[in-house]
Structures are given as C-alpha cells and as structure tokens.
Length: 266
Image 1 (cartoon, rainbow, N blue to C red):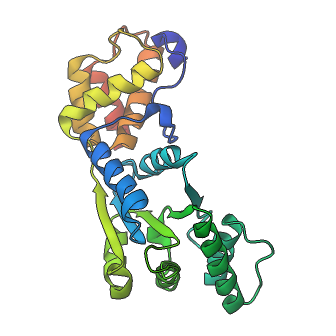
Image 2 (tube, rainbow, N blue to C red; image 1 turned 120 degrees about the vertical axis):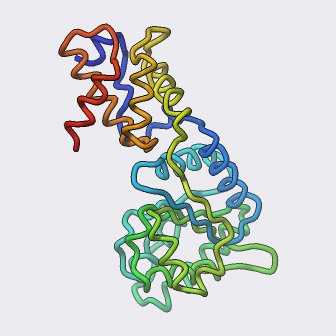
C-alpha cells in the first residue's frame, strides 16, 4: 500500500540494517573512519563502540563488514553475547578454521592460539565483532580480554570490536585490565536536527521516490523534533506517517500527520 501510493519500489524506512540505505552523516563517517583505521592499521586489540538503542551501531558494523570483505581481514561475528567462556573460545576457534576443537578449556585455548597464529602467518588478520556486548557477563568480558593476549612481537593476532549500549562503557571501566586494552572509544550519537531531513530524503531516494516531495518541510522538522534524531524512531514514525497518508490518499505527509502518529506512540 505504501509503495503503490507514494510511487516507491521498496519500503524506505525498514529497521533492518540494509547497507543500501546507509546515510553518511558526519557522525557516521567519523565513527566508520576511526573504527576502520583502528581495525586495519592500529590493530591494538580492542575497539569499543557505544550508542543508544536505534542510533546505528549495527549499521556501522555492517558497513565495516562490507569494507573488510575481500581483504586480508576475516570478520567473525559472535552469534550471541550470552555464552560461557568455553562456548566463546569454541565459537572463535571454529570461525577461525580450527578443526575439531578440543573440549577441555585449557586445550581449547592452546588450539585457538595455534589457529590464530597460523592465520596470522598466512597474512590473514582475524577480527571478532561482539554486538549487544552490554549483555556479556563480567566473566566473559575477562575472556574477551584474554583473547587479545594472542600476539607476537609486532602485532595482535585477533582484534576485538565491542558494540553495545552506553552502559557497556561503564561495565568495561569497572574492569581495569580490560579497560586499559581499549584503543578506540567511539559513541554513536543521534542525528543532528538539520541532518534528519537529509536522512529521510536519502532513504526515500534509495526507495525510488525520485524528486517527488513526499514529506513537506514542516513534516521533516516535526520528525526531527519527535524522534530526537534517533534513526530507528525516525523510521518508525515515517513508516506510520506514510501508511496513514496513503490510507487518507494524501498528496504529501505534513506536520500534523507526523504529530498524529507520534502522539499515538506515547
């Protein structure tokens, strides 16, 4: 219904982290550049990226994965942050290519070290990405720190990227040995008010809107105000406004319509 009424070829405001919809705000570009440099050039062992819910941490991770594809860097994504220490070690070992990792933790650590050393000797640079890392237990965070101990005289054999909500920074700070390993700390902030309109127009253009004015200027200002610049909230409000506008056969989405759907959420 939305696509047909507004002349689109796909849904413009889905909350899935589709790289086609990446909006290169000033904050996103800086965060991506710093994260990419830390992973590929510094290789210091640990990067920490925080941000409020819905501000684009996962999109940043997807952009990193896309950039690393086909390079010497192999990106391993932890399937869930709720693992035991042994499950973590096994997951990383299997992702790195270890065949039949042993069951005992000590033997598993040795096997993982051997596998990462071999990958490094082949010119590969493994990267472990842990999303929703604020859910990781203190004990597992300590295991993550120990993973950064795999190294030789010149570089680490595994770079770890932690992404999570703001409380992750506090949790890492409470573990000094881990905190000292963090090379990059970056906080993904909401969009600035004057970026919201450009964000909306970018997503509409990707979805095939062309030059058609779907949201008027006042509606874009209202979206910035009611969403507080959080991309996920912008997406939710814009989707509802498009749906109600299509149902009412409106020619454009106006300020009143944005406030209507925003009020319904409160």
